Image (cartoon, rainbow, N blue to C red):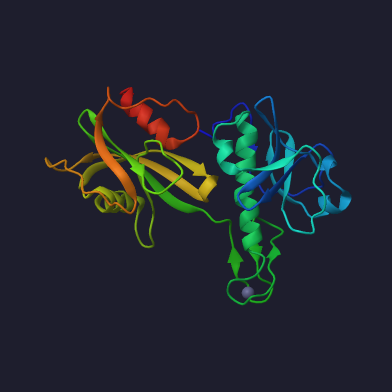
Length: 277
Ligand SMILES: [Zn+2]
């Protein structure tokens, strides 16, 4: 999965320090990141590629191996960008190598987008400040505290004997097979999310819900939790929520189409079921 980057190490402890010339500089603009792509490899700029004034605008984000990573959200007055670098959509980071830099880039986009959307207090409108102790924004007027935005969501592998329920999203750019998925709502456990989403999206009851693994999914500010569960009925007919899905159907292990990619929890769960691991 995208976060499996060993032997590289992602260190998210909040320890701002003075930047070195060869520390990574991650500049985002909405859901885009400043990169250069050469020989199908991702290259990220370093602090020395930017003017002193631009470096001043960058904040400490996290560390990757021995290097600290700093970043800034692009603004009209940021000045000229270093030559040879362009903004690319985060979607391209799903497949590009090296993976540890793609992971750093998408994580930076999530964090910088959060900082940009928390410039002002949502309660009283005052300008917010960074906490000195942790990765948190605090309002000096009313004390409102804000932590990075993370929305919990579930990925659901519904099984029925030798078969797995595969689906496709309606009206989205992503056209490959997916598993059912949905955000956890206020006041429910993630197991309840599993039951509710399966009922809403395909009209089926499930049992024997078991946790598999989780995945930080910065593309959508999400923390994904993967579950398998079994159909709790002899009736396997799907009632499709056509707002959410374009199709959903049962596939035997033999029929499940193979798409080996090394990025998403969804695909890992599909392959794991197919290979009966
Ligand atoms: Zn406030």
